[in-house]
Structures are given as structure tokens and as C-alpha cells.
Image 1 (tube, rainbow, N blue to C red):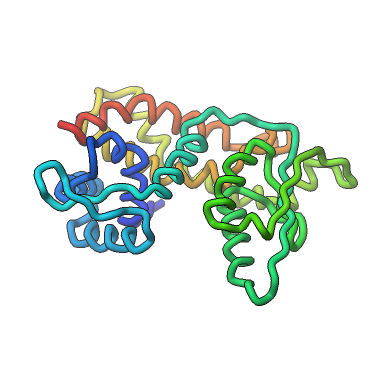
Image 2: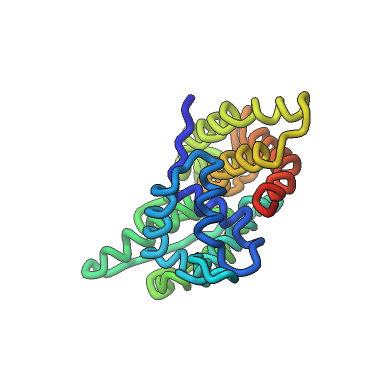
Length: 266
């Protein structure tokens, strides 16, 4: 199975994993070197940086030696901090649910599309038009996201229990496409579990190899804690692959992240 990593996605992943450890902005020359180790050529790095600048994710700056560099915008820092909690934090499974009820006037339907897409990215499932649901542990991140996007005027948030009428496990299978989520976990395992087995049985990788393996694994993994929002285990199929994929990523992180940092900061 081939794995696709876009240059723009890898730049975002790099900043989440290593970019914030730089003293000041990341020089363009460093970014070219570090993305080159992951198979991205210099023109692709530069064009992707330009697109991220237009999206206000990166801001032009100067490195300590006066060379061209880029810094994270404040919004980008907040997004990465939320990502840290999702990607690296131990999942806090709640027995309660967070319900978002929204109504957007027809003349502002572009905001309706933005609202739906952001709720989907946060991991919400759709109960009915204008009614979306997620585990209650996502309340803080959901509130911060809606505030950043200036969408709070259109949404009411509630938390509580599911009282029926279908069994909750059956309802969850309607609100989320569990088969598609399971497939994403299985694809991650197919792509990255062999790398973990090699680490468990072989010699310690070089800093460059550790960096490259970790960056590619993280670039795939970081989407999963959003697609799969941490549903209670007893509501999922018995053979759910999410537990195994989370364990594989956690061990890859433990074995590779610090070693990869030696390549980032030689």
C-alpha cells in the first residue's frame, strides 16, 4: 500500500513535532534540509510554505543570522497546542455526550458549510440536520475552535446522557462510519507496524532515519485522533483496531522522537 504525504501536510507535521523547539523562527534553509530528508524537494517546500503563509499559518520572519525564516502565527500555535492534547495525550473517555445544535441563516450558508466541516474535523458525528454529537471530553477544544472561527452565535452546546430509544451502541454506529474509521486504523498499522517491529528487533536507527520514520508516521497518525474522537470502548466492535494502532504510535513516539531531534538540531 502506497502512502501519500503532501509537502504542506509534512510542513505542518514538522512544526508540530519539532518546529517549536527552535529558538526563534525556523530558517528556510533548515526547513529545506529537514523536509528533504523526508523526500520533499526544495521547490515544493518553498511553494507549500507560500500557501501556508497565505492561510496565515506561517508568518515571514528573519533568523538570528538575518536569513529568511518563518514563524508560526498565534492561531497556528493554538491549533498545534490543541493537536498536542489529541495526538499525545492519554484519551479521557467520558460517559457523557457533547451535543452541538446549530442554525445558520440561508444568506450566510457559507458559514453553515464551515461549521459542518469544522465539527466533522473535530470528530463529531451527525445525528440529524443541525444536530451533531461527540464525546463530552471534546467540549474545551470545540469551544475554542468555534470562538476562533467566530461561529458561536450560531451554535448551542449541551452535555448529557443518551436516554434512547435505540441502544447507544446502535446509535453510535449510525452517527459515525465505524467501518471507515476501522479501515483508517488498519491502514496505519499496515504502513507503520512493520517499522516498529524492525525497531524492536534491530539496531538503533541513525538520527536521520529516526527523524524520517517518525515524521512520516506522525503525518499519518495525527489525523486519526480527530476522525476517531475517543468513543467509549464498550460502544465499539469487539475487534476494534484503534487500541492497537494507538499503542503502535505511542511506542514509535517513545523510540524515535528524541532520537530524531538529534538530526533536527545537530
